[in-house]
Amino acid sequence: MTDAPRPSPASRPSAASAAPVRRRAAPTGAVLGVLYMFGFCVAGPGIDITAKLAAATLPVGVIGLARFVTQTTLLGALLLIRPEPMPPLRALPAHFARGALIAVATLFFFAALRHMPVPDAMAIFFVEPMMLTLLGAALLREQVGWRRYAGCAIGFAGSLLIIQPSFEEVGVPALYPLGTAAAFAFYMILTRRLGQQGGVLPMQALAGLSGGIVVGLALWAGAGSGSAHFDPVWPQGLEWALLAGVGVFATLSHLLIVMALRHAPASVAAPVQYLEIVFAALYSWLVFREFPDALTWVGIAVVAGSGLYVLHREQRAQIRADALAAAAAAAAGAGAGAGDGADPAASPVSKSGEPS
Image 1 (cartoon, one colour):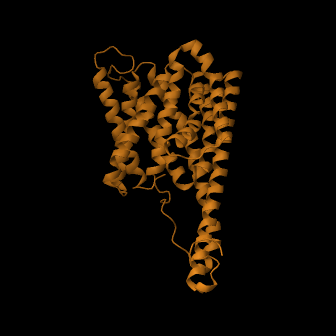
Image 2: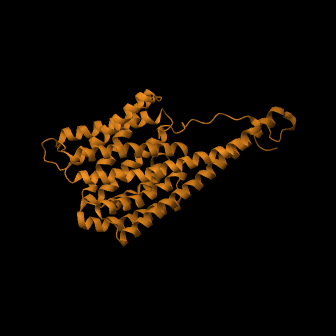
């Protein structure tokens, strides 16, 4: 896993061989990204299955703390064996914010799992790509057309097909996966922004450390409160193994998603993530004998289809933006070349700047 190629650009080929090498290298990066994301889909539900088992007897905060302590310990040991570049100091506040966001997302989701089947909670969480699109428009001033807004609206409507029956059955906890989706959307924005600063292991170790601090403070504040989520208790027997499993699955899966985003654009890697629902349904049936009903599958289909459509429109928008940028650069280069070698008297533009 950690022997994967580093994300830095490949060595520049000579001018004579530049085009063929690029054509061979680009698909390789995309394929690696897809494979890493598929690995995430296989490993990711393991977090939820082990967390649901542990949540039967342990507070959510204890499970979350174990997840981050395990992640930090494992990655710290790996860094001693295989050092990687640390992020610049100026980026540390953003890394801490990233860890805090994944802590919030984790706590919301683990709390939901105490009341809901894993596939149902995960299906509601998958409105996250739509939230990411809306956040990009609101915070990053990205251009979002009406088709993507419509896709987001349909996706949220699909999530209601899952939320509404769950809300009638379990109440407010049916909304917790939406909190996870919101926090994870912000987390993904920071992951993409910080993905090229430093190595993968330090990036995830910092997320584990800061996430553990946030959860630890929540447990300290909740000690003696009687809270089902944040009043800490000491694990016993098999609970230790379940907590270790949560940490191992979390560390592996989030390393895989970072590597996926480093090797392939989000528009290529992200659609594969919907396979995670399939593996979650399989694991949930094997362990808990829980399987989504027909209405839930309809909701899953609507959410997944809307998410894929939004990603498709984003990819098309990016292709158009890249084409316009390339055309503008080519025109600027041609204009500069013409100006360098042109006779001023023969120029088609007058001194006033207007066409002659």
